[in-house]
Every structure is written in C-alpha cells, then in structure tokens.
Image 1 (spheres, rainbow, N blue to C red):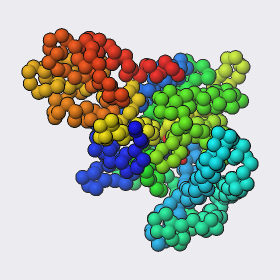
Image 2 (image 1 turned 90 degrees about the vertical axis):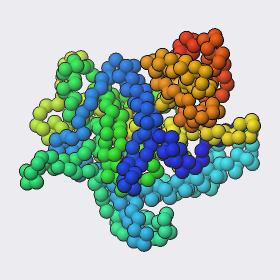
Image 3 (image 1 turned 30 degrees about the horizontal axis):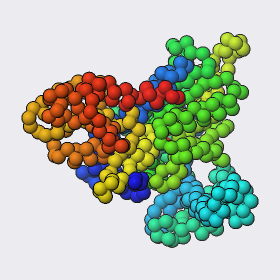
Image 4 (image 1 turned 90 degrees about the horizontal axis):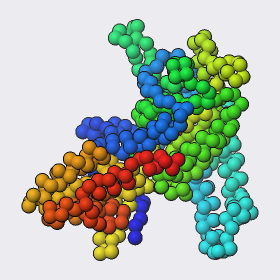
Length: 513
Ligand code: ATP
C-alpha cells in the first residue's frame, strides 16, 4: 500500500534533508523566497532542463537555442510594457501587517466555492453510484448552477476592475465578499495599490553617471531583441522558434509555497515566430505538444489541466496555463501565450529600426507573430518532486519513504554497493563503479548495513542498486535491485551496464513525443 505525502511540510523537509533544496544563505537565517539547490537537486534540475532542451532543439528541426544576458538595455522594458504594466495589486491587513495580492485573495475565495461544487459532486456520485453522470449533474444541479453563477459574477467584476485599474472597486469587492486575512481573521484592509515587480539595479561605477537597469523579469525579451540576429545568421525561415533557459527575477509581493513562487527563478521559454493570421492554429498546436510533453513523463494524465485566461496580459490575444495538481491544489505550471506582434512591433517602434521578415512565398515583409511556451523550471521541479514522494507500507508492516521519480530524471541512476566492507568486495564494487560512472550518473556507497543503504537510495530516487557479494567474485554476476518493485535479479556485470543505461536514457521519453 502506498500513499503520497499529503503534507507539503514533509515535502519541504525531505527536500532539505536529502540535499535537494536548501533555504538560501541559511546560516544567516535565510532570505525570503530565495532557495539553493543541493547536490541531488541540481542533478534533477539539470535532467529536467535536458528533457526540455532536447525536446525543443533536437526534436524540432526549426527550433534553435540561445543564451542571452540577464542585463538588458533599459529601454527594452519600456518597449515590452513591463515598466508601465508589470504590476500586481497589493493590499495590506492593518492588524496582522501581512501583505497580500488583492486578486489572489479573491481567487482563493473562488477556490472555496469550487471546493463546495466538488463536495456536491462527491455526495451525488456516492448516492447515484454507477448511474452517476458528472457532466449532466454539473449542468443541471441547482446548487451547482448557483455556485457557478456566483463565480462568474465575481470573476467578471474582478477582471473589469483590474482592466480599468479601478483599485477602489477591487477593495470594495474584497469587503463585500467578507474576505478576512488568512493569518488573523481581521477584515481591516488598507487601500489596494499597484506594485511593480521588477528589481532595479545600477550599471557603472559612479553614482551620478550610473545607468538604471532591471533584472529581467522574463527571459523572452532576450529572444525578441535577438530575433534578427538569429534569423539572419541561421538563415531561418518562418515558422521557426528560439528556445532559452535562464534566470528571471520578480519582486513577488507574497512569495509562499516553497519553490513555487520565488523572487529569483529559472524559466524555460520558447518563442515561435509565425506569419500573422496563423496564430490560432499554432497556439492550439503548441497547447497539444506541451501537454503531451508533460504527460510523457508518466506522472498521471489526471494531474494536468488547461486553464484559459479570462484576463489577458497586455501583449496577448489568447493565453492559457497548464495547471498541475500540486499538494495545495491545481496551480499554474506553464503558460502558453499568443503574443501577437506586440513585442517585435514595439522594439521596432522604440529602436526606430526595422524588425521584419521578408517572406519569399508572399513576396512581402512583415513583423512576425509569436506563440510562446513558458515554463518555470523550479515549478516543474516541484511538480516532479511532490508527485514522486511516496510513503509505502511494506508487507512486514514497516514504512519506507521512496522518491518514485521518473527514472530518466533521477539525480543518480545507479548505486553500486558492496554487500560487506571486506573480502575484496569494496575493491570489486569500485571497479564496477568506474565502468558505470563514465556512462551514467552513479554513486558508490559502502557505509552502514545494506538495508539502510537501499533506503537511502530510495529516498533520493535512485532507480537501480547493484549489489556486489561473494558470488560476484566467483562468477562475475551482481544483483540489480529495482527501486519501485524492490525486486532483485542476478545478471552478468556487462549485461547490467547495458540494461540500466538503456532504461534510464532520456531518449526513451523523447522518442514518444
Ligand atoms: P503566476 O500567475 O503564478 O504569478 P505568471 O502567469 O505571472 O505566474 P508567467 O509570466 O506566465 O507567470 O511565467 C511563466 C512561468 O514562469 C510560469 O508558468 C511559472 O512556471 C514560472 N514563474 C513565474 N513566476 C514565478 C515565480 N515567482 N517563481 C517561480 N516560477 C515562476
């Protein structure tokens, strides 16, 4: 019997205890919403990057990669709209002194109504058993209809007020809904204010002549400003894409939920340049491709869903999120946006330089349109980590904690373990380890009893353990223990290397895309 770790606290403490994620500068009591990746975390992160990077640049012959700088010319952010519009509405509670995003307070209120709908569904499904038709129930049940209508009215009002920058009405809505501070229960709120999320810094030695810069809040602009460089030097024809992985920075008002919302994080973004008028088709196409990329990892189709944006960002004509079922509910993991020609068009305007593509088929030049896919590497890490952390009750009644991470993403693919620390077993195991480590990420461990070593590898998600015992010396065989089933089998050493290397290769998943 196995169950997922229900408590998010367990996830966070496991991540720390086993060298995945540490609070940043912890010896100074940490820095809010900034985290460091440890020895196992960095491997998992790199494997996720590899899966994404290869799926984009190897498996699409019209997508190339770049690596742009974090610092960019400050006018970039004026042109992109971030100086004027990259704001979140914030509100403070006067009693608890806690700060919130006003829109998130309302969205959390809506989530509560949604859970009431789910309860109605659960109740009805128990009552009607096999004859229960969920879709019909959702459409016809009076209570559910009322809840849904309520959600619609609240969302409409919130979006209209935000669109018109009517912050007074956002506050009024919070008061009318009777939303209380989740910490103190107080309803004593300040006015709602806009807060720009970009971090400012300075370039240059002298205070007077220093240029004001921003740390980039998204990696996308590095791609837009290099559009012509890549298109010309790569002789790229539309449609084509540019992919990038890199750090982004946002001065988030409330940064909670561990690495879900950080102030320094990493994005994996791909901007796909297309002729105007084709954006709908490519938008749908990339939605499918990206969902498939997630599902191919084998973490359960039911854990993903699309969420269409009602309120579109300043640059988009269509947008949706792929949400993942985190321990704290379905939340955004990746965004897919149809960005029109907003960015390239504005860079053209602000630089006074032509940023266009000559289409040989149409015999005309135009500013390309863009569909982008944008995923947070850290959120992807969190989704894999939360979903894989399992507590299992074994037949003998004992518990084991195991990280059933997709084996292709596991930090270590194999652990080489001598059964005992004597009788030449360590020497032989070390020889085997040397052979393995040049092919796949391997670890050698000879501390503690074998059972404890297996548990340690389970806890960090190592899919295979190879045990070297006295029989190994006699006949050049070893046992392979499989993490998920805990089954063991005996094989020749040379066979073990081939078998494991084949099973943990990321190419296996890439080929299914
Ligand atoms: P949210 O609504 O959660 O603030 P967003 O819509 O602002 O996210 P985008 O601007 O679409 O996010 O960024 C693309 C992706 O970058 C998101 O889907 C998410 O995975 C990731 N991301 C955004 N902000 C953060 C953050 N503060 N910490 C970690 N990842 C982030």
